[in-house]
Amino acid sequence: MGMVGGAAQPEPEPKRAGARTLVFTYGTLKRGFSNHGLLQDLARDGDASFVGAATTAQRLPLVCGPYRVPFLLHLPGAGHRVSGELYAVTPRGLSRLDDLEGVSRAHYERLPVSVLLAEGAQVDAVAYYAHHAYAADLWASSGEKGYPEYSPAVSAGYIRRKDRPQQLTFLEQIRVFVSSQ
Image 1 (tube, rainbow, N blue to C red):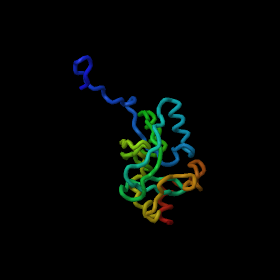
Image 2: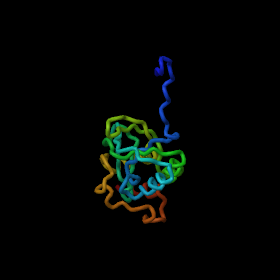
Image 3: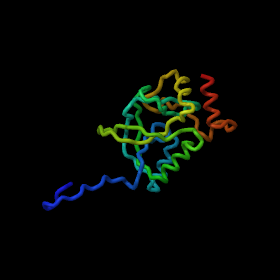
Image 4: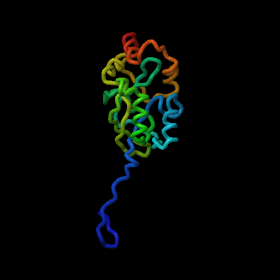
């Protein structure tokens, strides 16, 4: 309770920014990468806003799969603290991100992640992790080595979805990739 003119006043509730969800991006949705245009569109429509640079609070594996597609793996304690960007996203924007990330098709899954902002504050967010059905296989095929950041050097050789062979589904491409490593 706060005091105003000697009378107790209830503390204001924290601002929820229109029920926005904090989304940690670590790959192609970051500024300067191929899918960032979607976040720019969402920002233009009022459905996303940049919060700041962020790093995962705990170590997580960040690996590249077929066509240098980045995958964050839900294997806490392995890998590195991963650098990325944090956005505040409306439910409508989250739905569009879910579509891009293939959540309904078991490509990625949106799960909680704790991140540290540049000024040191720790916040709870969500991230798009590799689906659990193939995450362990991606980790094994990477030699259990990951990256601290999806940088231009790490992403070299990335092939956009529209430029990949269309005869295989994304999940089939992952299966071929892990079996060939």
